[in-house]
Amino acid sequence: MSTRIFAAIVVGSFELTMKIFEFSGKNGMKEIDCLSRRLALGSDTYAYGRISNEKLDEICRTLKEFGGVMRSYKAEAYRAYGTSAIREAENSVIIQDQITQRTGIEIRALSNSEQRFLNYKSVASRGESFRRIIEERTAILDIGGGSIQISLFDNDMLVSTQNLRLGVLRIQEYTSRFEVKHSRLESFIDEMAMAQLADYKKLYLKDREIQNLIVLDDYISPLAVKLHGGNSGRVMLDREAFEKFSTRLRGENPAQAAKSLGMPEEKMPLAFISAVLTGRIADLMGVRQIWAPGATLCDGIAYEYAEKIKMFRGEHDFEKDIIACAVNISKRYMGSKKHSETLEEITTAVFDSMKKVHGLGKRELLYLRLAAILHDCGRYISMVNTGETSYDIIMATEIIGLSHGEREIVANIVRFSHGSYVYHGQPGMDRETYLKVAKLTAILRLSNGLDRSYRQKVKGIKAVLTDNQLLLTVDASEDITLEKGFFKERTEFFREVFSVEPILKQKKALQTQTVQK
Image (cartoon, rainbow, N blue to C red; front, side, top):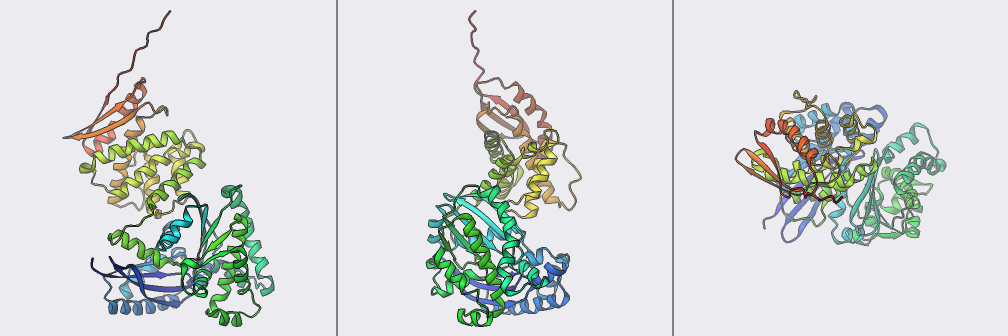
């Protein structure tokens, strides 16, 4: 298999980083170079809401240097992403456009859920260590500049994920603004964090104890790996060992501590904040051991690229985690599990049978499955305006692995499956997205009619497309008059979108029972 060179660039809240990777069939994914430049963009965004022209100039100078290094390695491809400092800036769109115009490097701002998903993939790039740990009750603590993300796993399955605005740069900005003394720093962090963490425990942890905590950050995780000889698989710390590690960061003299740890002095306050947050969350969860893999967002970007070009196949099913996230959202809003499972089965059968007509792919099937799972979550709030309330819930709730735009596609499919389709589209919706939403809405509407009673009377559906007809053959031993009626009502929009006539055929006739007098 041929060798490929790839560059992953991250415009982060504290620094700009580029890693060069080599992909080959023999060695898999191998990091061959890493460059970083300190640039505290977060101090602009979190304090003033925008990125200054001076910081923009520094970004462009650094990215031009990165571009030269990429060319010297003859990189075939690159991906460049901005994190929360870019994402949350009021002038984000202007900043991204200026970077592209001035450097030729296109930067895309990641949504929080996309960023955390890539970080999650960066841990998966560590191979066997990740697979072994994730089989137990495990939490991934992803500490960023603007916020932290806590994701819970049980038996290799994502249970929940939640974002909290407790990022290290955000906290540092408050400590600087409020002139917090060094002696008061730890208690100040406690006061900022514990109210949110107490609510988190009440809503998501309850009595659940977590065995392992995986820490992802740019400060204590790489430092822990460095102090353990550069072997990320060995950095498994019990609580006592982590406390000793944290004590080294608490020194009254940051310059002296930085020198003894071999760490840039400017990173010491951020590493201290990260260590305090990690310790408090470990206490909250009752974890027994902490793993610091030293993985970064660049590793996750490279891992995803390697999957996309099929250089290797990841062993963990990340799509299953996205589905699990939706299932847990549905459960939180009292959605019907059996109805959602039935609807997911029907919509998948219809989607697969219509591939030649709709021209959609695997990612669009994922949107449809998510919409089937979440289509009635709004009933928790309103039994009348279910479409609108479901839309609001989906847009207000992160689904790890989906961008904001993708989440909006799912939310609109759900909204229009309950009410009239808006033919002029939504503000900002392009033609391609409009057609995706229309096609997937038509499939969900038609499918939902087949379980209108929420009693799963329709079994073993078989969908076959012939010419301009879609024949749906179902097993049903009960009376399905209700389902037939709603199915017929919902064929009009389906015909309009696909120019295909759906026909429902009942395979098993209703058995007539003799009533003895």
